[in-house]
Amino acid sequence: MSYIHIPTTGPSDWKRFLAAPERQWKSGYSAKELAQRWETANGFPDEINSILKAEQLFTHVEPLFAIPEFQVPLPGGSRPSQNDLFVLARTDNGLVVIMVEGKASESFGPTLGEWRQQSSNGRQTRLAYLQQTLGLNRDLPDSLRYQLLHRTASPIIIARRYHAVAAVMLVHSFSKTNEWFSDYATFLNLYGIKTDIGELHEIMVGSPLRVFCGWAKGIPAI
Image 1: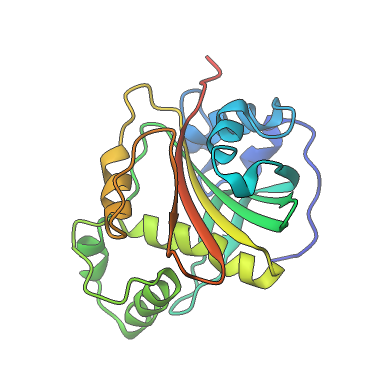
Image 2 (image 1 turned 120 degrees about the vertical axis):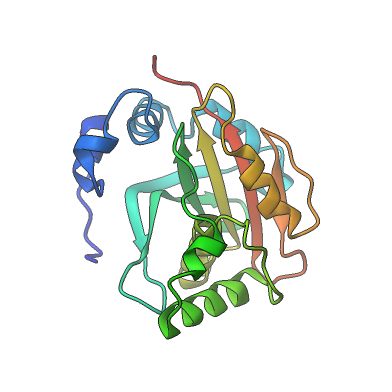
C-alpha cells in the first residue's frame, strides 16, 4: 500500500476505494453515510466529539488527517484489515490513532466459528497474533464476530507504529434500530465490560498503550 494519499474533494471521492463500489455506495448504506457525515463535519462529527470527550484523555482532541478504507496488514495471509476510516488525532498528551467502522444494516460478518471452519496454518497464525495484540490469551467463543477482532487490533498496530498515546476503535452506526449492537456488546464483555450506545470504554487496562472502544449513533444524511 502506498504511503502517499490524495485529498478528497467531497464524499463521492470515497467511492473508488470500496471493495464493491456499485453495491456498497448507496444511500442508507454505511459507506455513503459515513463519507457524507465526516466530509460535512467541521472536525469530528458531533456524536464522535461527544463520545470521545467523555474521557478525560480526549478533552482536547483534534483530528489531523483522515484516510478512508485504510488497510492494516496482518500476518497469516495476504488480506489486510480494511478499516472504513483511519483518523490521526492529537491531544495535549500526544497522538491518538482512531479506526472507525461504519455500520447500518450490514453485519460484522462471519462469526469466529464460521471463520475457523476454513482451517489453515495461516489462519491459526493470524488468530494467535490478534489474540496477543488484544490481550485475549484464552479460548474465544465461536459466536464472537471475527471482524471485531481485527478491527480493534488495527488501531493498536498503527498506534504503536506512530508512538501514539492511545488507540481507539469506534463503531459509527447509522442504523435506526441499532442493529448488531449486541455483537459489539458481546465483544466488550470479553473484557468484563457492560456497555451501552454512546459510551466509550478503556479495554486492556494496564497496557502501556491506552486502548478504547466505543459505539456512536450517527445522524443519517436522509
